Image (tube, rainbow, N blue to C red):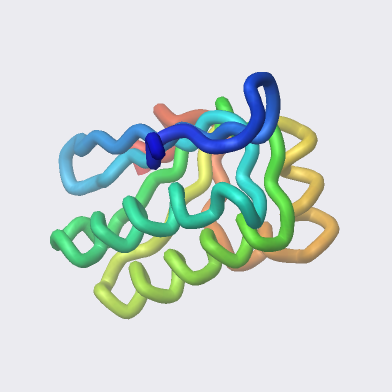
Length: 122
């Protein structure tokens, strides 16, 4: 099975790209983050912190959906990154994803930026 893509032919897929810029790891999930795809994001986030990159910038501009399992992945990454002296910055959230953070109050525990560029220049 291709661990980079799961789900049906048209919906339910999640692809995750990781790159490094300066002291940040930029993690870009694209597609739908839910209980079927959560590990595809959890694993690279944890690998970044374990590899010494505790400042995680999650570029949410291509994230089309996030459920409570996805939110828990990001909250777990936040705790791990903060324990290592870093943090999780969320950038470019689409309104449908931002609404999940607003409803749950999770936006209060993350540093949220309108754009990836803003997150990287902080």
